[in-house]
Structure formats: C-alpha cells, structure tokens
Amino acid sequence: MIQHQNTLTRRRFMGQSIALAGAAAAAPLIVPSSALGLDGNTAPSERIVLGAIGLGFFWDFPIAWGYKTAQLVALCDVNAQRLESGKQQVDKHYGNGDCKTYKDFRDLLARKDIDAVYIATPDHWHALVTIAAAKAGKDIYCQKPLTHTVAEGRAVVDAVNRHGVVFQHGTQQRSGWSFWYAAELVRNGRIGKLETVHLGVPSGRSCPPQPAQPVPQWLDWEMWLGPAPQAPFCEARCLQGHSWYFISDYCVGYIAGWGVHHLDSAMQGLGDDFGGVFEVDGRGVFPKDGLYDTPLTWRVEYTFPSGVKIIDTDVTQQPMGVRYRGSEGSVFCWRGNVLETDPKSVRGETILPQEIHCYESTDHVRNWLDCIRSRKRTAAPVEIAHQSTTLCNIGAISMLLGRKLRWDPAAEKFLGDDEANRFLSQPMREPWCI
Image (cartoon, rainbow, N blue to C red):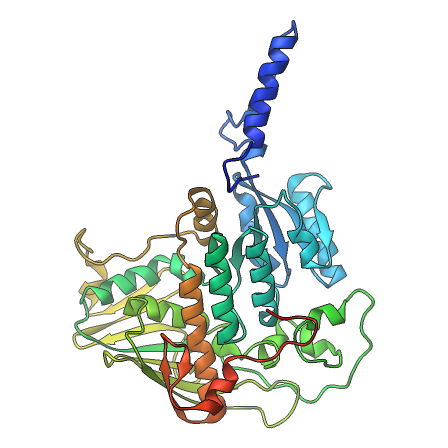
C-alpha cells in the first residue's frame, strides 16, 4: 500500500524483518525475487491498492489491472448481480478469491489498506462519494461529469484540495494525442485568431411513461436512489444501459453525460481560462411526456470575453468531434488520433520548445497511477473537472429557462438572475447531505 505520510511502510517492515530473521537463524533466509520487486515486477508491498465504487462503467476500468504497479482488491455496488460478476472477473484475473465486495461505499472507504478508488456511480452520487473518499485520504479517479450541480462541484473541489488527494477526472480525451496536439496548434496561432469551436455530441432519448415494477431482490433500490427524490422502480429508469443519463434527477442529460468530453477539450484549446464573465445561450427540444425529461436536441452558445464562441450541439446539427475555426484555417480532432487540418500543412507543424505546450499524457489511467506515486497534478485535475462540468450545467439551465444568461465564473453565479441561480444546487433527500 502506498503511504501518504512518512510512516513505516510494508517494504521497510519486510526489510527489517528479513534482517532480524537473518541475524537469528543459522540458515540463510531465501526470499523470492518477485516479493522484493527484483524481477521487473512491483513488490506487493509497493503496489497501489485500489477499490472500485459503482460498477456501471466497470468495463472501462479493467485496463488498470494490466499495470503491475496496482492491484484491485475491493468492489462496491448496490446491484448484487453486477457485484458478483465483477468479483468473478477480478478473482479470475488475479487467480485467487481475495476480492472483497461491499454494498455500502462507506464500508469500502473504511479500509485502511486501500490507497485509491475508482468512482463510477450515477452522477447524482458523484459528489457524496468523492467527498467521502477525499476525507478518508483516498486518491480518486471519478468518472465524468464531475457532479450533478455547480454547488456540488465546488464542494468536491474544496474537499479534494483540503485533504491533498490526487484526483483524475474521466475526461480521457486529455490523454489523447489528437486532442492535445490540436489544442497546441490552436493556442500557438497555427490557424490564426481562434473564432469558434464547434462540438458534436450524441442526441438525447425519449421513453414513454413506465409502470412501477417490483424491485428485484438483488437491487438495493433505496441506496441506488440515495440523495435523489423518491421514485418508483422500473427497469427503464436504471437497468437499461445507462438510461438514468436521460432523467434529470440523476443527470442533466447527454450535454453532460457525453458532452463534457468535448466541452473539456474545447476549453483545453482555449487555454483552460474563461477569461471573466461570459454569456451562455441555450435552446433545447425536450420530450413532451414520458420517463425521460432531458433534452433530445440542443444548441448552446458560450461567448467568452475574447469573442471566441463554443457552439455545442447534438449530432443532428454537427458531426461528432471538436472543430476549431480560426481566421486562417481550421482543426478537427476526434478519438483514435483523428486529426484533420485546413490547410493540410498545419498537421505537420512542430510545436517549438518555447511555445505553449499542453499537459502531455497518452494513457489516462497510467497518468493517474503515476501521479499517485509522484503526488503531482494529473492530466484532468479537480479544478479543470469542475470547470468543464460547470459549462454543462449552466448550459442545461439556460436550455431549461430558454434564455440567454450571464455567468460570473469567479463568483460561480449568474448575474442578475435569481431564478437561474436557484438551479445551481438542489436539495438532497435525507439523510444525505454535503
């Protein structure tokens, strides 16, 4: 287990124990080289010990098992079927039956041997679990978007900073070459003066009204709801893929559930700086009835003091990806290292040492694990996570109200609009609170 303080580590304890045993015994003590990390592996005592809370995106995390510097030892989920399936995967990977399972995240966080946690609960749980993990001294990888409301985001930032834990946001495009190289081309003037950034995000979904269904015995429905309002169980609410993305009690919609990736990349190209008070003007088409109530289609314009606009739309209006348009050309980037430039010669441009460089990471999970050891800033730290998620949340508020709003990023409030400000937070169902 990685120690955050200068306490007696298991490696030091092992070394002292070996020395004492050698002094006391007549015969030499033979220790396998793998136990000491001498065969190219990491000694067990020096591995980062991990727990996973919420297995909805568990398919996203097994890549961490491939790193010899880490070991996953505990899982938590309110879905007993998914929890057992996860345990089987982990135990098969390590060739043992050691993975422990928990229904309550607080029990997992109470384990002193766990260094860090991967959080992939629904969005309405992110703030509570992340703050609790920070208080427990655990380093954190939290899936996107950071939180369900702006106020929750500020509370998470404060907790992470107060307790000094290493944080990585699940906006993995920051560790994609095409995205950070595109941002470097833009920020170093290769397409002239930046004018607009166009984002294409998957559209929302609708669902007809659903009858209440009996809660399955293997699901703790009360714990799944947690801080969200009381609601009857139905499979379409939480068991059909990530259907909760389209219900406002749990997520503000795909503008955040998916769109935070592209808004985060756009801000990387702008230099991760709002530059002062700016405008947000959103319009959306919402389902007329049914279970899902977040936008089906939308267009949100963010206008910054520099004059640059981010135009965030669903894919009925703009192809998937991030397109920067400047006075002298354009850059388009997408996953899989897709990079297209106009003129084409821009694609081969070298960013000189004295020019602006983005944080260079090509492996988001490895970056997190490396920073846990070094205690350095990650590719997607908590302040950036909050900033990008805030754009999603205020865009959703503008769509809901159907009018242009002015946002003060320093105060984290809308200017002169009490009605809009009331949407910056929402009450949590007892006994949950931040």
